[in-house]
Image (cartoon, rainbow, N blue to C red):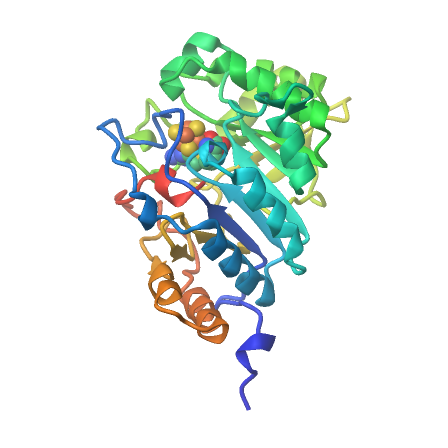
Length: 342
Ligand code: SAM
Ligand code: SF4
């Protein structure tokens, strides 16, 4: 007899077990990163085209009943959505969710909510444990060229606010860009090391535009690792250290400092341990970032589907999860990263 839907865990036909849901809560952003957003004028989704927080929480609860224990809130820039703190503080009430992460560009973390509390403090109190902050360069001028905005100072203040708020874990994420930040690898490592933060280097993916893969833009993690090793000596692999994602970690010789590499394009084993499912802000379930497949869960949700029917929807989506992403095979971007949620 088949298991009732309520008892099932989400596992695809290749053995990937889904325990991690990335939830994008907005397609809007206060920056315009070249690799994330197309250059042409951006049209935002209409408000009723975005899942309400109530709808999102219901879907997180359903995912929790199917084995998801970790949620990461992302966007767009999640901190630009009104009432984000109220939303996040309701997630820990879902018993299955044991870990809450947030991905942010950091620009709003230092904002004062009251004279004694920053946005970072409020996020920690709301239950965020794992904070990922994007920082591609320490050069303010280059930062503006990459992000289209002059907000470098805000990000640096945001990082200090996050440190002061004492999250369980803070990671800095740097997208590798030839000609833009290849001279920043060592300064960024020193910056992270001085603050006891984990720094990760990420290969660009052709999500929003395929230009990022051209020789003059793309830099592989292998090349970055070689350049770092020419400065520090051989990095020491930390095969036991994992944080729920596809990064591989190393220690800087002679230090306690850990750095990570995320090589979606060049690491052929990248998808083997994938445990992720994505929920976009416009209510699509996406089994893989690097595949066109996405399934509209907003429609049944708004048409009155029961919890059991929605669970079956999740299970059917996971059953369609591909073995690996399709970025290497002439993937043509058709949806903006900002609208999917990184
Ligand atoms: N706005 C937040 C931020 O910038 O961290 C959260 C959303 S952003 C889409 C999440 C992550 O995706 C960021 O670390 C960003 O650098 C990364 N990202 C965006 N476009 C990318 C691309 N084409 N390739 C690789 N990483 C990308
Ligand atoms: Fe905004 Fe983050 Fe995309 Fe940059 S990477 S445009 S900060 S959503």
